[in-house]
Image (cartoon, rainbow, N blue to C red; front, side, top):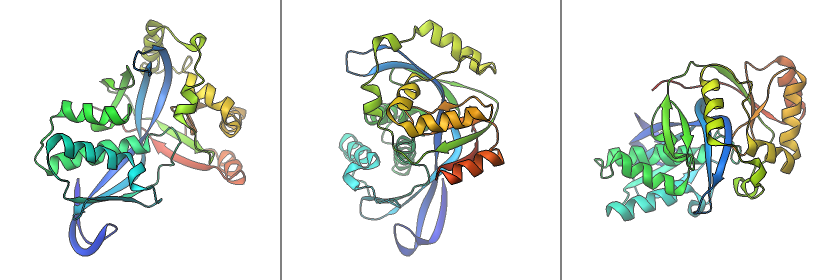
Length: 287
């Protein structure tokens, strides 16, 4: 956490505030291994944080959550998380939070989950740690299956709903991420999963092992395949990237598509003509 003093997006001047970077993620593959009794699915995936960030400002003041994109407070999962935090600890939240959004919403990059984890982790620390690491993981995981991943640094294999994590040390790679300007609904994508799309967990583990060892030959994403069918724009981005000879991968349930490597001038030009946003990023690896 860094502290800055002066004019603040969350209120008056000359007050100390905390500034936090909230990173996005991509999924290096995602496989569904079975249905759960709680209505969710078990998955196997490899989460990797990337150098695309929202910026979160926290300062003392009346409890409120605002964003640069105008997300209604009651709809913001950070607000929901802090309300749960207060209920569990019995501590009122004496902070105002402002989130400067740069990670596209509904993109499969985990912006909201990252905001939730980063904000709650910081406020828990500011309040003297009323929740343990495990309690914080449990709380954030109840709101977002991806959120526990953002509580720690590094890349991780995710299982269960994505909240059973094994952190791994991987070499940094350059990625090009393209956002086609459409929001993908995770709920809608999961609703289209069929039993014949399930993968044996042992097989998924073997593919993850290959990816960690440097091979993406068998890397895939069943949710991404569904998203390409539901949202033609996602499929168009994937085909556009593949036209230039790269393997294209959907992150999460979409809508962002990425490839390993720097953005080609032709890809940047083509994306601009189609009003797609292009992000040149690197993975944030290490444990």
